[in-house]
Length: 454
Image (cartoon, rainbow, N blue to C red; front, top):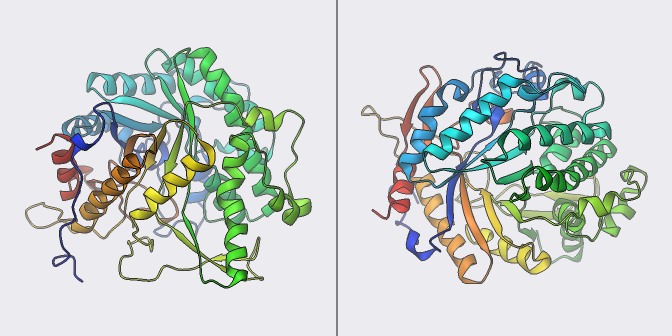
């Protein structure tokens, strides 16, 4: 069925949600800020990764990106005019510290202070993410997240940022998607730092979780009324068939992809089955680590994009479980299946299994090939339908009793899409990278109508 003939989906109304429900958009520092060599910012692992030939599909980098560092007032104006009441952003660690044990960079601190003031002036509740993958390269040169000392460096970042912004920022996300930091960056190798070692990846995952757990009480000490949590990328999983081998493969994948992070966060330690399977690749866990990781949090962030179908494949590293390519008509430009019901299913499972307290959908969005018409209109019908249908699934989850308290669309603007460079667009707002002109896509206009109950 073509886009033009697909029936218009039924979407909920904003009034179907609680009055204090948070409605936002999300961004991340390296993907939008640019200004890579401005005001004391030092090299990140993504600068180094992007400078390595063959790593980024279009050979680009985040050196300029959306120039949000200089154009943030316009971007926040757009957020306000859409009717958002919250805005999720991340801190560029390389803007704050330039060396191990150094003092915070005042110009970096001041940038985020101005940014937060700008949010508050526009009625946008600030949601700060401390780590969205842009580790300083000088720390990677010392071993990165594989080294326990990086946990201490992260705590210095958390301390500096909460002291600077804690009088105004009350919602803190320690990490965005530890799976991606650990597995995609250190085992699959197609994200920075581009390593391909499973033992390293598991140790990285442990240190990331440990840094989260140790940061939570620090955040609360500096910001007594803070709300602290973490954002995980999670997928509902399906076995490729009823064959017991596929079902067992799905269970192995589930234990590493889902429970490896959630179990220790909620006091259960790492799944015993995975520790058994990985053997000598298991991370070094010191006394007290698991207790620290399980520090009580105030919310859980869930990033949902698509379900995964798993097949048994004994030769497929690391656990003989392979994610199958999606089948069917509805596939985004990233090759991801579109399944709104998966969001409600996932949120219900998280609530049933872990009772994490308030849940926020901290990312959800879609990538399509956008076309700018002669009159400047971007008729992104599929993205608009994606948004409408996923808000319907969100409402289903709320009606089913899942304590979802907010939704952040990914993303406010088109941006540097990691290894895809600028070839893929997720934004509700189109960026012309030659001129930096911002244009609202039809999806943004629909979101505005939804939020303003027009």
